[in-house]
Image (tube, rainbow, N blue to C red):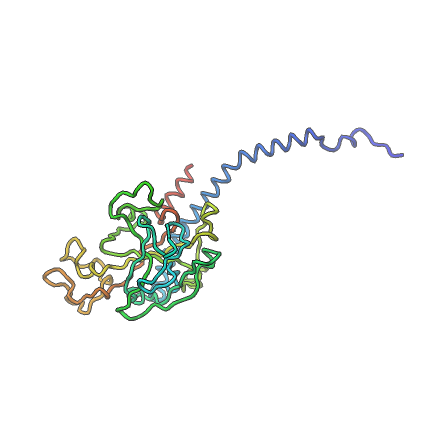
Length: 319
């Protein structure tokens, strides 16, 4: 017959002891949840600002190393044909109707620009978007299309917009941008939407930068499931400025006697003396415009540039 001593019989935990331990663990878990949530938010902000800065630098390095801007950007439209383009319906911000039109008070709009503004700086192909996809970010495109080289060909792209200084209505989309000053603060660059279009492209996996100046196309992950990479477009944007025809003709600058700051903004057939006495570019046509890389941004419910991402990061760290 086996004999059990008193110590052997009391080796395990009693039900009461186990219950107390579980209650303590549950209490600790409850205390940790806010900290974990805050940690996720801080990680998101830090990753976003780092991706914006890294991609900004990568585009500039590509231009220096390969003598031009990268091709293969996500166009953000399903067709670049002027007046026939449909805006990608799964952009994170924006009331995009089935017809591909954006809400009047959104921070995006559809514009027509000369195809030569892109091909002139090396952007000779774009990726067309697929609004029927089940993966809004990683399977967002349908095919590649060559950007026409003819100077007279106009194409449709998506650009940033403001409300021209008018305050956004109370029922306007969350990302509505009132003025150029507000957009300048977001992008960290001075802008003039009367004189230039600020066109945007998504930096997707087909861009020619991949394997050259970046190892893979970055993604910024939303904080809510409804805005996740599967449901909404979470790629980072490359922002380019393209002078409007009236700007190159001298019609929208504050001082018509002063040429554009950067002579590459408006190509001329007579560089030695394009300015007339009336203050217009005599040899410049509306087709002689060139895109210029400006910065990067994240197309979230609110447009966020590098300065905003850094501010969010430092604010979350302080808290």
